[in-house]
Length: 306
Image (cartoon, rainbow, N blue to C red; front, top):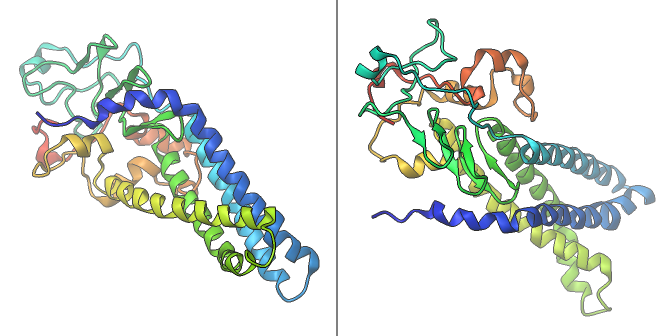
């Protein structure tokens, strides 16, 4: 029997809210080290280094604003729950050929959809929620409900990452990587100087903040880099963390429509909105995958069970 790592996610609920404070604490230390201690005074003093310091501060505040916007968008956006009225197709024809039923939101003009029933003809049903499960939906034991296109429950955002906030989560990772890399690089000269000054005089608070800021941001940058690379590969294959864990590596994934269409099912088609934790209204209307209920599939794999 395979070891189900997701059983251990139930313990995340107890520490969830604390992690928001941890994130804000790291932001506070970084702000103090970069703005108050190192580059703010350089701008005030003027001189040859003032322009460089001003540029660092501009990038720091811009990335910080995008980071916090994306972060709280993930925290406060519902990842997507199953509508109480949602039901799989139950017509006689669909029961006889269970691989091609359409949901109530489908239309004759839609492309092929993933079946809401298994190959055995039994509808996917969540016993814990006492309701039917749409395609790619999973039950979260931490939230206590079914989440549309659930990726994972993230302790850092005190929320599930699902169909409606996955893009915001990816942007949070991107801006965290850019911000922590900027802070690490900008504090590197002061961090090196820390070891030269520490023996000459008592360690002032500014040097301690610089040291902590550098170490924390470098650690976050390295860890987020690996996490972001993993999720880029998931987006490219139109799969989630849970689906990648559950499916067999030899199985051709029926949701994989090619990199471009896979990307659009997460970020939309409007380039202006790709780097913002927002969606264009037209994309929400046209791209059914963004609502978390209907997903186009590859026509050559229509009969494959997911």
